[in-house]
Image (cartoon, rainbow, N blue to C red):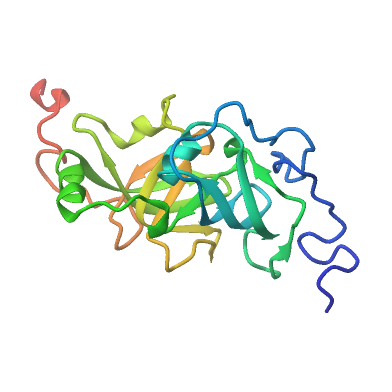
Length: 232
């Protein structure tokens, strides 16, 4: 088959503008314009990324400085280059989208973060970061997607707090896999998926090995005695 004929491919017949993907899956000529009035600090570099929207999978390079999470959480349009796009389930090949020059983080449901998206951390720094966090294995519902992985939260926070409004728009999920129905849409070589909390509709603690809620054991619930138990 041809790569761009008759609308058969993901980008068939579409002519991307110079801006971002709209929530309907099309492209808006103004919504994703990069704001040059607030330049990012540090050296800007092109970080490889894969992003999934409601209708598209995008692959390319995102021009950022520092951590990808921090760049996305600024909620400002980001310059992108070398972009290809296609259906999120991989049902047809990705096709070049040379006109797609920027993307609005609000339109991205998930972004994969490779190792080169983070500034180097020593093992001591990485350990210190995790020591002060509580680890939870969770299933996240971002219709029509489902993400299973591990999140790290501050002590006293429960996983369903991710549904609350927060300045942190994207949350990293480690050891993560993302599915659209039975189809795995995440890259198996990527360890971390950044999930847009604005699309989050459900959070469930699970056993990551089975993908199911953990079996409740007799006695005190996980996390110690609750006030309900004390009142019995």
